[in-house]
Length: 593
Image (cartoon, rainbow, N blue to C red):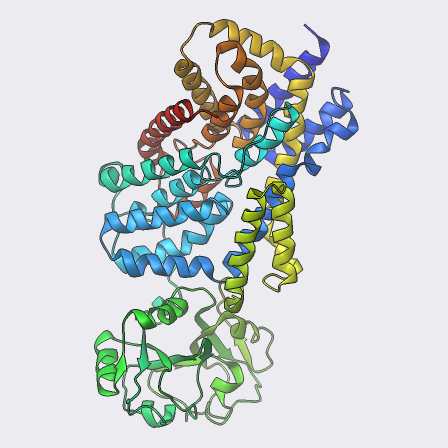
């Protein structure tokens, strides 16, 4: 046997063992692999680091930036709000709507990112619909993985696949070449949980989630929204005239007019016809207010409510008055609290005394706690403030709602360019740069959006696939595999390839499984009468068939919040795995490539 084949085999074996034992971080293992190939002279130094300049690495990093742009502009939060609005509380409808939305999002956003974006939204959906969180978290995670098969940029294996095809001299796939397969995989997953979720998912369990500020202070009431009618008596009146004592239990949080949102409007804010008002308080009090003041409610005002309640840029926080604060002895009215800080005070606490009614005329003292609602960016200005100290940490990053349309346009144009024949890496990287130039993201945001662990993993493993092919190891293994499968039906060959890719992805990373298997099947395909590109696509798709164990990053991310055990993944994941293989093999066999 050739020395080069032995050396490559040793490196591959070492990588498999290190991946399986998890003794060293997987991206470090990938770096050790490409460095070993260079020092062993299996690859030239240029070839050993070529993965970091590959189209796959550039495209993966750019996809992460584009996805972060959608997140920072509140697009994903609005999608989550829409799910709750239209799906209602029926479990099957909520499951189908949530899984479908996450799956579609995962087609253009890295699946771990899509799952992370929907993690808080899923918790809110569970609380608002009464569905146990354990019946939602796992389906959402599975949908994020399945959605990665909708486009060639939806997951690492599919992005890497085109680079491996180019190395083998084969034609790469277009952006939507895998979409027919991905659609049926996603629909199959949705159907599985919608029809059998009650039998295969644990019921009534969830991770122990620490209560948030609203729960701790018992102000976790619904946020309502209404629009001031053209003949409403509210028009022309100020906040002070309307809300001073006449609307018990209701707190005005924000006013919107013409797309502009004014959080914590001052007592002198004058209402106008057409304005939308957002309030916190009991349902019956809000209904009485809307009826008495001639305000309309319904779908026309839902967007404002979802915007404030969705946690995307707005929320509750605790503030304490510092010792020797210059505002000590002054009332919130005197310091114009709302205008100065841009947050709405809801609860005042001094010692054992809580005040929930209007406390605008109550002098503040050091140590007083104020629970308030407002934009996270306004709360952040209080960090390091000389008079007030922020106790609870603001959630998320400041949201640039005005840039939402720009972000969506940039993503759409980037995808359109890739379909028009522009190389995928160039199209997506141009979109990522456009996110920064347009002000959707700051340069620092773009750098933080990139999961450098994934980038290093892919860049380090791509040369390993090149070495397997260049050394002759792929040809040797392909010959043995061709001999074993000689005369077998193409479906048998494809089922075996799918099973190997699925099993290997549970032991090592899905990108690693793709890099190792694609060169092998590209050489085996012609000998067994199967299109090698179809086998390569099957490998990349089935490398994402990671449902049986919580080893996939998405499953690991949701295991705690969902309160799952490994047994839960074995029960639901084994059925999903078999369904996945059946759909993928059947469709790729029938459609061909």
